Amino acid sequence: MFELRIRRTFAAAHAIVMAGVREPMHGHNWEVTVAVAGDTLDADGLLCDFHLLEQALDETIRPFMNRCLNEVAPFDRVNPTAELVAQHIAQAVAARLPIEVRVKEVRVVEAPQCEACFVAPNSAPTDMSKNLSSTMSSDARVLPGVSR
Image 1: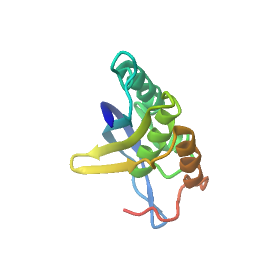
Image 2: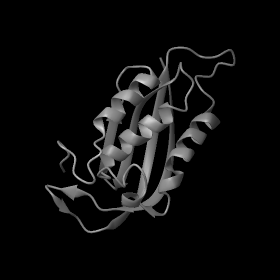
Image 3: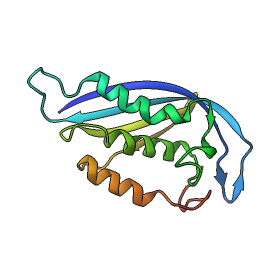
Image 4: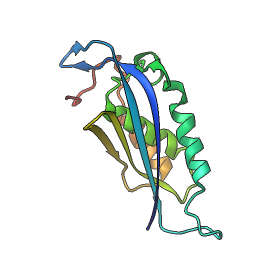
C-alpha cells in the first residue's frame, strides 16, 4: 500500500455546543493533515499527483478561511467540532479523488496538543461519502453522541 499526506492551515472561529450549552465564540489556527492511500501506482509511479490532492483540500477549506464556521455550510447546520470538521474534509476530498485513491484519515489540530482524527472506513470514496453524510445530523447545533 502507498500513502500520501498533505498539510494545510487556515484561521477560523467557531462556537460549539456541549451538553446543550453554546461556548463563547473563539478562533483557532487550524492545521489539517489529509492522508490518502492506494494499492497501486500509475504508469508514472504515482499514487496521485500531489497537486490534485492539494487542490482538493484547498477547495474544501477555502470557504472556511477567516470565517466563523458556524456561518458556513455545513456548519451552519452542524455543530462545528474538530471531529466533524475532520469528517467533512474527508468526505469532500474523497469526492474529488481518482477512484483508485481513498482517503485514509484526516487530522485536524485546532490548538496545540488538541487534535481530532477521522479515520475513514475501508470503502470506495462514493461509499464513504454516503456513510459520512448519514452520520452528520441536520440538527441546527447539537449532535447525539458528540461530547468533549
